[in-house]
Figure 1: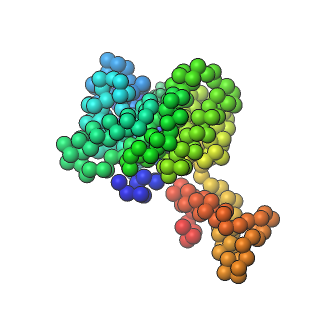
Figure 2: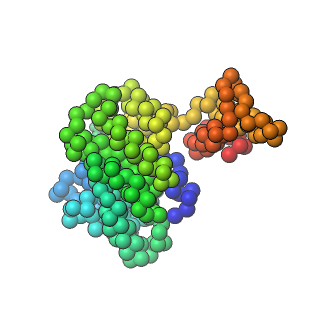
Figure 3: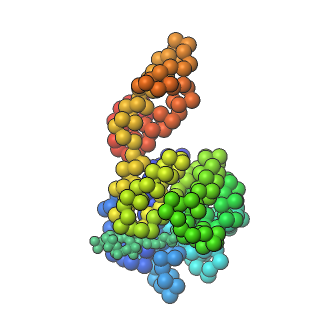
Length: 301
Ligand SMILES: CC(C)(COP(=O)(O)OP(=O)(O)OC[C@H]1O[C@@H](n2cnc3c(N)ncnc32)[C@H](O)[C@@H]1OP(=O)(O)O)[C@@H](O)C(=O)NCCC(=O)NCCSC(=O)C[C@@](O)(CC(=O)O)C(=O)O
Ligand SMILES: [Mg+2]
């Protein structure tokens, strides 16, 4: 896979229950950045085989119009995951989300099966990305080893439902039960040079609460969030897309710092605030995100 594929914009990764044909066939119309075709918890135990057949047909024949397609396979402690991997690779999924990943050995096991399937179905070896969902204290404490366990690894994601269950934690209004996990996950992802995704927000009708949580995780450095409903997409895209003011400030900052660098000046004041060379990288990141979000037409990136 290319760096462009690995680093593409992923503000929203929307779960779809693969069992429900009506959900999978035209979900691209809502324009999430990625879909997560779920074979795990959304699919009833007795429906695993039919969901997998539906997955293969969806991957093969539905045009998602550029929306990235990840598959959440069943857990590695189930009888399903091997066939899930074969169907995902045969259908041409962009990547696989490993649920309940605990260690780097889990990633190695999936990678071996993915490579075998790529050879079996004539897909380019190395083309299928991996991402890992961290859903327990052990997983979060192993975040860095998981994040660095494979060249295919594109990102790690907090999965709060199972994390709270395994932590014996209660859900709080301000998310304090998730603070340490979020901090460790974003740190591990940044240290490994891959992406970090926050968990689903389950109260579908509470858009104000979703916005607060999205702003919190954006400010911590997360790249995006897993979603369960199209109703949540617009809010997340709005929160993660730089505003006109942020874009203009980033442009001023880059131009001013570059101009002053030529004159041998390191620290200066732009729009009333002190800036220095350390802030240029963040300003370029803002413009890159704005460009990927379709709101920057300037020439600095
Ligand atoms: C919740 C509900 C049943 C509600 O359905 P309803 O139909 O009542 O919803 P409505 O709002 O009425 O739908 C209005 C219109 O949107 C369409 N529509 C709705 N949802 C859509 C969607 N997702 N994709 C495309 N289209 C959609 C619908 O078809 C309708 O279209 P139309 O009829 O044409 O108007 C539905 O959303 C849904 O199934 N969500 C996904 C649930 C899921 O996958 N859960 C597993 C992943 S989490 C997990 O496992 C925990 C985790 O593991 C997480 C981690 O790992 O991070 C952890 O540990 O935390
Ligand atoms: Mg879960």
